[in-house]
Image (cartoon, rainbow, N blue to C red):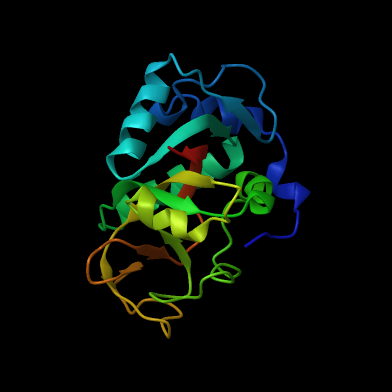
Length: 207
């Protein structure tokens, strides 16, 4: 799942940052010069923490958050917002879902810097519902893609236009679909760059 560093994708762009800071997703970002990527720990006493924790607890089944970090990456968010606008202009009107992605601790840094790489996902569990990046609406499902003892996952904003059921042979979904799922919609698989943004890194433990 990790990808090779690409410093050009992380160059600071003050104009882009200024535009991104107008978006509701960056309400808690500081309106100052911003590094290419920053992880900001979210206070347990904040409304932001409460909202994420409430979503997590809905499907966690015996898990609790120990640390929540907000991913602040203006470059990735800028491309995500442009992709969202592009899909809207093309008439697909995507839904914006908050989905969980289980991962390994060693991949977190690269994901926050460069985003998920659909070309390299599925190495640990395979591509049961499509050869892309898998996300789940349920914490308990995403947890199966984490490594025992690390207990980390990423809450991600994901654009879903049209979806269809996929399988292990699905390299890309057939037109006009952009997403594959399983028959219960407990997994969403994405294939295109910038269809997702890693919004929070969640560290958790078992009760």
